[in-house]
Length: 448
Image 1 (spheres, rainbow, N blue to C red):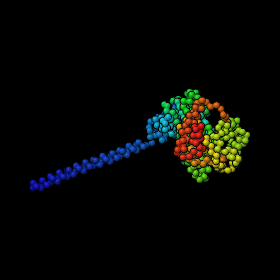
Image 2 (tube, helix red, strand yellow):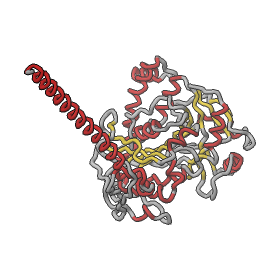
Image 3 (spheres, rainbow, N blue to C red):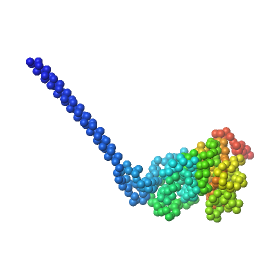
Image 4 (cartoon, rainbow, N blue to C red):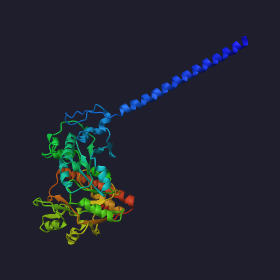
C-alpha cells in the first residue's frame, strides 16, 4: 500500500515537471514569434512612402531633408540644381607632384552614361574659368557626350557653380550629356559663397571673369596646366573613341553623327589617329560654314586659313591642307580618309580622334610650349599612322597674327624647352629610336 502511494507521487512529480517544461517552451516560442512579427512590422513601417519637405529658400539651393530615404523621390531640379555645392574638397586626388588637386565628375548630367554608351566618339576639352563660356560654341554642333576639365583658383569655384547651375536651367539638353571635372592648385577653396544672379536667369549671359588679380599676375604665378586638364577630360570619357580639342575649337555641323557612321563601318585600327582639319575663320564672316564646300569658298577668298598658318606653320603643316582642299567639297560623300600624313613634322600637333590607348600628355610641361606636340611626337615614336578625314572639319573663330608674347608666356616656353631636352632622351631610352636624329644633332652642337 505504501509502495503504491510512492509510485503515484513519483508519477505526479514527473508529470508536473513535464507540464512546466512544455509551458516554458510555449512561452519561448510565442516570444520568438512576437519578435519576428515586430521586426516585420517595423521594416514595413520604415519602407512606407512618405511625404518629404525640402527647403529651397536659401542661396545657393542646398537640400535640407527631413527624411533621408526620400532623396530618390525628390524633384530632379531640386537635387541637382547646384551639384558642385556638394563637392567634397577633401576627396580630390593629387597629381604625381602633389601640385594640383583633381576632382573627377564634379557635376554629371543624367544622360552622360547613356550618351557615352550609344555614341562612338566623346568630345573632350579643357578651359580656365574666364573662357568657359566658349563651351557653348564648341558644343553647338556636337550631339554626343562631352567631358570638360576646368581649372580654377581663388574664389572661382563659385563662378563654376554658377555656370553649372545656368547650364542645368537654361541648356538642359547640353548639360544632360556633359561631365565636368575640376583641377586646382594646392590652395584652399570654399564651396559656399554668393552665386551671381545670372545663374538663374536664362536671359542673361554668363559672366565668368573673377574679381581676383590681373590676368598677367595670375598667369605668372599659376601656369595653366594644360596637359593635366587634357588627361583629366580624356580619361573620363567612356566612348570607344575620344576627340580632344581646345575650348575654342568648334566642330562642323553633324560631326558626331558622321563619325558614328565612319567608325561603325571602318575596321578597328589600334595605331590610327584620325586628323580633323582645323581652319581659322575671319570674324567678318557672319555664319559658320555649313559644309566643306562653303569652307573652301571662304578659303579661296582668304577669309579662312589653316590653323596657326601665320603664327606657327609647323603646327598643322603635315596635314597637307592643299591636298585636302584639292579633293573638293562633295558633300554627298560620307566621312572618309582623304589621305595619310606622310611627312610628319617634329612640332606637329593636330586635333585628332583616337581610342584612349594613345600616350598621355606629359604633365611636366606647364603653361605654354611643347604641351600638345610632345604627346603627338610620342605617338609617332609608338608607330601611329595619322589619317586626315574629309569632309568634316573644325573652326577657330578669328585669324591669328604673330605678336609679341607677354613675358610670362615667354618664360614658360623657355622652361618647357629645357624640359623637352629631358623628354626626348627618355623617349629614346624607352623606344630605342631617334627618327629626327635629335640626340645626334645635339651632340654635334655641343662639340662645336
